[in-house]
Length: 421
Image (cartoon, rainbow, N blue to C red):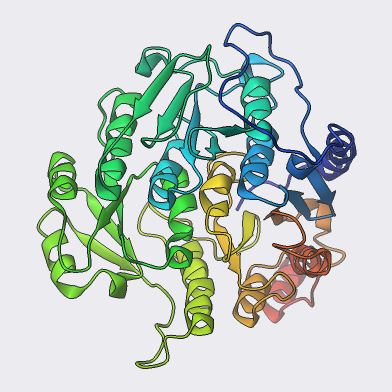
């Protein structure tokens, strides 16, 4: 259980929301291919309204805007304002928003030891909001990567001029995932991770979204396999990790033959992936329901020191719409900093799924009045990603109420203990 954060923090966030929203009233996001150099003093560069905190309530903070570039920029600036050396990242990851596998794999770089925020490009062009955010964060440079300030992942991503960079190019999604794993190894000075998250290349993006936050929190790389086998490049990477603990999400998308192959490289654990649609009923709605359930299962899962294990109050939580899968890597930084929240999914902007309502009820903070007042309680906090097209204001209000600490009746055991005292 986490210690309760000061209640004044939300007031500060609300004030910051107003200040950020006042910056850059224009709605244009012109694409650029180069920007300010690394020697530019760190400053609070303007942030367009799409990338600002838009609404902060008692227990929730909304980050982002109308597209994934704005969402990633808002998350990056919330974690790294860039105003002091301690609030500047070592390096920033640039990835093409059209390259889902690369973005998903890059999520692991948001965790220790890199702590790298992700910004999105549009091919070789960088949206204005991504460039402004990069300039404002003024990355320090990663010593383990020869001082690289920008890590570009993908063949089409261009690095803005004036920044020390490391470019990762690979021919296949599986090879890109392995290249990111190699970066993690270099950043951790050769200390190989003891876990790996394995996903199916063919899996629907919504089912893979929770892996982004899990990889960021744990530092475990995301590696990709096919339904009918393990690609050679993935097999070599797993062999090089010397029998890591392997975790899969949505194992049915991987296939039994591939699962059997994976067991040759280390102990395999299948994280429950929600109820798979019945045969012949794999509709979009059924897949969405499975994705919502899968995210909850990932949030609950724990195996020793691996996994979230969020089964009680006192946690951060990240909420995203499953129709915007790139919001998962965009928000991965929130799973590796601050109040470390697992990713939870909504299938509609205007409705909280019933199964998610039940889960939030299970972990709702409570206190027994007056013996245990709320100031001694544990609090939940939700980060909401995107604008009202992703999560409506009414839905935000509903989530806020579900996260609020509330009084509850004293149990018979608590009453007996009080009498003994």
